[in-house]
Image 1 (cartoon, one colour):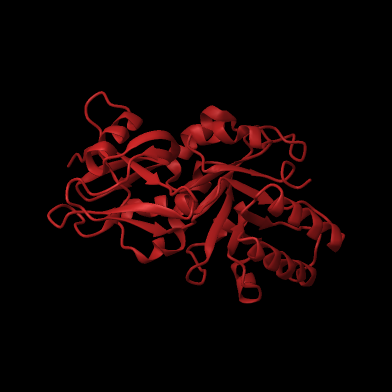
Image 2: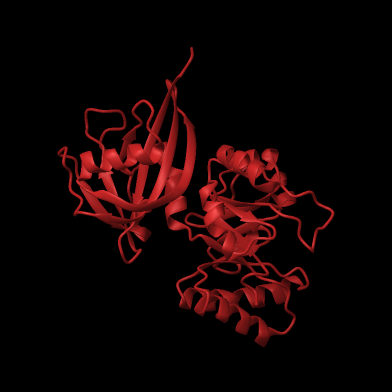
Amino acid sequence: MVKRRVHVAAAAIISADGREVLLARRPSNVDHGGLWEFPGGKLAPYETGLEALKRELHEELGVEIRRAQPLIRIHHEYSDKHILLDVWQVHDFAGEPFGREGQAVRWVPMDELVNYPFPAANLPILRAVMLPTEYLITGEEANEARFIERLARALDEDGVRLVQLRAKSLDEADYLKRAEQALALCHERGARLMLNGEPSLLEVVAADGIHLTSDRLMSLERRALPEGKWLSASTHDLRQLDHARRIGCDFVTLSPLRTTPSHPEVAPIGWHDFQQLVERAGMPVFALGGMTRFDAHHARAVGAQGIASIRDFWK
């Protein structure tokens, strides 16, 4: 049976203070009735995703989009159809949203989104909404005081809110000691900390999640993390992206987008192929490899969650 293909534009409408997102409840007489979703609707013939979104939000919520940018594109297979969710993050709009078609709408705090039931196709959108657009990977630093100084500067001056503790030069005992210090610093600033290592590290340090190397990723057959923890991974090609999706990673880095001084022998992916891979990922993807903040808008435009970097944040 040939499945029908449905292209839907959806909006993650963020409050002015960045703490809440607007949800709508699906009517009880439609598929997935009673579940919550990000508002939007199907594209009409010859509409772009953004054109459809502007029309749908006016019809459904009575608001006018002033500024929006791509957030994530999700392909999802149901038994009878193939859904493409073209999701935009709305930063500025005019009007006070309300359910013009009688549907319930509600502003929901970011940290309460996990308590709401969504259609399965919406779940990667939840991750994208809750993640920042910048991912700091810490550089090597033997001196503890300088490490703390650098991390504090990234959190306080650069506003970083997602950190991966990468410290290949440390043994396990020193790594765990540094992880405790980094975790305290991150949580004081409202940032999340990912540990680069085995999932068992979370039994010792109550960090927010684990980041897997590509080798660790490919050795795992299932997601083995405590409830409420994030799982991310390093990926470099479609095979690794597919495996990350299969075991339930929440997000990944994809590299190298450009040639880097640390791995000059590795051929870069380039923006074109990067966009093709992101389209297939089905989860938030951070562009890694020669990235700076000047690349952030370009990365978002081709479907990335944002950029990951060592050098640009680890000053």
